[in-house]
Structure formats: C-alpha cells, structure tokens
Image (cartoon, rainbow, N blue to C red):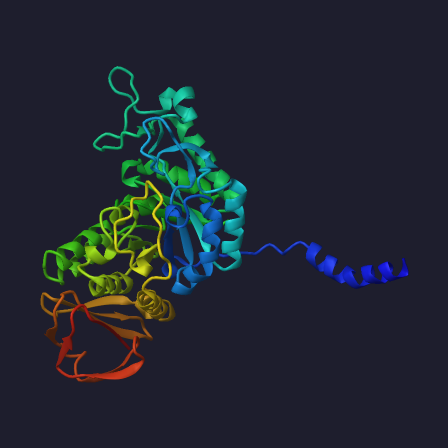
Length: 439
C-alpha cells in the first residue's frame, strides 16, 4: 500500500497537468489587406471523413503564407434531383456525413485557430435542395411560376436546386438565424457567400448588419459576385471577375497587357476605401474546366499569371491543389485524389511569392502606377510614402525586351526573389513568362 501510495504521489502532477483544461485561443482575424485565402474543397483530401484528413495539412497550408481557410459548402446535400453538388443544400444547420460530424468540424476550427488560421464557410443564400424541409413547410419561401410551381434559378441550368424568394421576410430571418448558428455555436469567422449577384442588395445588407451585431466577434465577409453594391451591403471583398476575364484575353488571346491596368481601374471605381477585390488564377469553378497549368499555357505561365494577381491591388487566394500543380480538371461533385507531395519546386515558388507580398506593405497597400511597356509585358510601381517597388512581368511564352522609362532605368535595385542586387539599363530582357519584383 505504501509503495502504491508513493507511486500515486509521483503521478499526481501528470494527472493534474493533463486534466487542466486548455486555455481557449483568442483568435483575431487579420486585417482585410493582409488576407490570403486558401480554398478547401474537402473532396480532394479524402473520400470520407475529410475534416479529420484536412487537419494534418494545416501546417503546410500556413507555411504557404495563407491565413484564412475557405471551406466549400460542408452541409448535408439534397437527394431529390441531385447531381451531388455541395451547393445543393438540404439543411443549412447540418454537415455532410461524407465529411464527418459537426463535432469533427468544431475540433478542426479549434485547431485552425490554435495555428493562427481563420475559417470562413461557403454560404449558399440563393437556393436550396428540392428536399429541404423549407420546400415542404414553406412553399411561399420559394420563387414560383405562373401556376404555382417552385422553379430553379431562372437563366441557369441549376436544375438540382429550388430558387428562394427574397420578397418573403420570414425566409430572410430564417436564413440569417441559420448563419448566426455557425458563428455562435460552431465558431466560424465569416462567410464566402455564393452567387450574390443573384441576391437583392437590401437582404445582403440586412444579413451582414445582423451578423456584425454579434458581440465580440469580428467577421470576414466575401461575396462571390462583382456588383459595386456588395460593399455598401457590408462585404469586405468581392470577386475580381472582370480582371480574371481580362487576364485570359491577355495571356491566351494575346491582347495588350496594358488592358489589365484599365480593368483594375474599372473594378475599383466607386469601391470604398478599405474594401478589396479578390484576385485568383483558379478556383473550384475554373478548376472544374481545366487545371491552372493548362489554363495559363504551362507551368511558367501559371506562375506569371499568379505574380500578376499577387501584386495588383487586392486580396489573393490559392485553390487547394494548384500549389502542387495538379495536372487535370477537378470535378468537385466527386472525390478526386491529389498527390500533395508533387512538384515541390512549384509549392516553393508560391510560398516565396506570398512571403514577399506579406512582408512588404507597399506590395499590398501601395498605390499603383502603370508604366508603358508595350503589349507583351506589365511594368508598374507599387509605392507608399516610405516604400517603393517595381514589378515587371512577361505575359508571353517567349523572351521579350522592353524599353524602360525614365525613373525606372539606370538604377540598381534589390531583387526580392533571388535576393541579389540588379542594375537596370534603359532596356530589360525578360525570358518567357519571367517576372521581377524589385525594391
């Protein structure tokens, strides 16, 4: 007995340490200008129990330079008229058992916060699945045709979903209440709101005002759309769709690179100070058609394009799998295995670009000044009162030489990528899809 008692005394500190509850992490969202989003499609991580499969990747995601995880819809999927799309939601307050349980997701959020990663979830306000309980219990919450049949969203081929009627005030309040559940009960840090160009601005304002009134909770709100009124409705960011389309015209149709400056100016016209456009080279919709490598001609083209979106004004994202150069399209309606060890040199390049961006305020927040560099290259300055940078990007799959303007030429700079001094003369030769970030 004495020996056992002595053993218990020795083990007591161990039990006390392990039984002491962990202190809750006081996670704070980054400022909007510092946000780098990593989009998570759970279906590229595992065929089942994806929430548990994602956890081991968090350190790798953070090491890329990302600080916000955007989860594509994690909710229960409808079965009636189903295409197995995660955007056909049966229940706004339940999770898809394919991915795990609600407790699994809560644990994943806690782990993200411990690692300094925020979590926003995809919200689908425009429509529900046909077997949502709302269809059965509240037919008047849906858009109907002339003979009273609920319809799918007009002008689309989204036949697996039923269109919601935002003239109905009860539906609006139910929607907002469901969103509050994910903030108050689950702990998410905001929402990426799907297809909000279809959703009335007054509802978006009503919704975001209600969410921002939650005490002691800062939220990040991203709208998938391009309307200017998204910002007056309360969104922090919306999509740079116009810029993305002009990127294709420049890189693939050989339009002048200078048109991207006009596209940027047009997108930001009337946008309030502190609000940003989200720039990308791929996402789940684009990757469903082709990989980012084939989209942007080849691997070097994909990195030239990413340098463009990373150093133009705005926030930036990575779609999970592009950092390893997944070579094919990804159908997000089904599981697609990805080799996360592939192309380490590509991952390192994304990591380097994002590290340069995050560690130099002027490259994120500086004013943009465009220089003329012909049709085949971008040449611009990002500058604050204390920092000045010059960025040159070849948008073609062949070497080019550009004339350098006064104020840029005949100077010695520090090349932030290779960390060496570089002296520019009155012209600059750039290899195929080469880019330079100079200070």
